[in-house]
Image 1 (tube, one colour):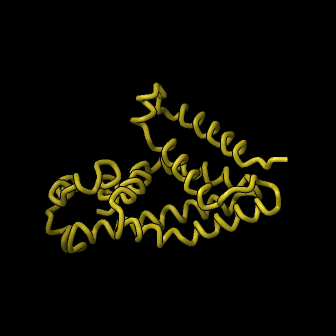
Image 2 (cartoon, rainbow, N blue to C red; image 1 turned 30 degrees about the vertical axis):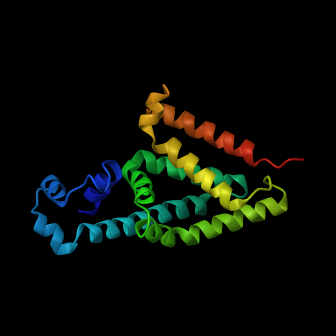
Image 3 (tube, rainbow, N blue to C red; image 1 turned 90 degrees about the vertical axis):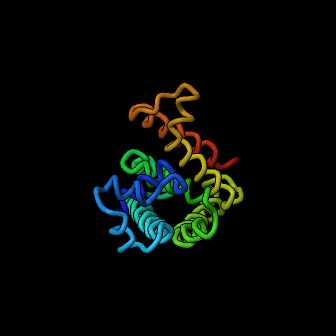
Length: 189
């Protein structure tokens, strides 16, 4: 149920998803969904919690294998692109939850805050050490999040700009995005 809800909420959107349609897609009755989740809102809450956990685990795993400095930034970008390929609806759900606003966006950000706090501390430390250009780490994280999620998930926009959203072009876009971030974060001497 949760995977089907992630797929529907992340691709069609929360408002366009009905429990009736979700049940039909799963081959079950709507009452079965309501047995486990007393409302569409409860289902969304469970989906947000599961997605936050999955995203956190993917990023933590990438960081555990990453080196130091910019290698950690690149590891995060690679992890997000892997998720975009493997679970595009999960990243679509992030966009959808942002669009829905509070209380849903607050629920998601509360769960991701520890990662965000660590990211800010990492960036602030790198900037203080002179290995990255000094800037507002909050604005940098917002910009990087928007850029990485947008490049990794906006197939329709890519098509409109004449970019083929294939696996090969995704690898090229990831490589170009990493080079862009490396250039943007390079310290000024």
